[in-house]
Image 1 (cartoon, rainbow, N blue to C red):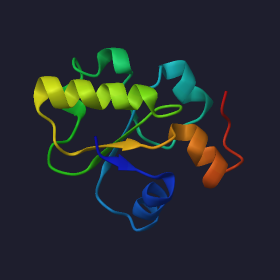
Image 2 (image 1 turned 180 degrees about the vertical axis):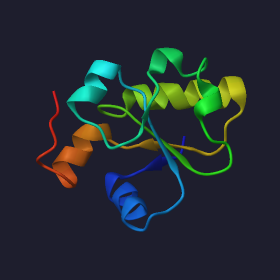
Image 3 (image 1 turned 135 degrees about the horizontal axis):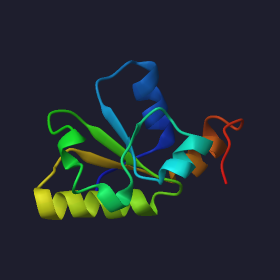
Image 4 (image 1 turned 90 degrees about the vertical axis):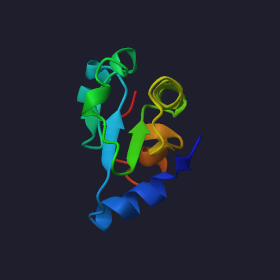
Length: 105
């Protein structure tokens, strides 16, 4: 599984690179804090896969990196995605290394 660090994601955002960010946490978690990604909870990732790009990098994130890894495994194994990257450490790593003011739970 391909991974990306929060520092690499921050650089992509700062450079206005063309990518998609998917947040696989539950809506109530997304409401607490998010990185402006599209919220598609893990439980609906296959059902809502038509919302996930196939023609550019897609970074998948959650709270710590575990659910996003599970989402990527499902998408790669069941639907053949090859453009997915897991955000190492999830939003917890983002708080620790990029933005200490972001709320986490």
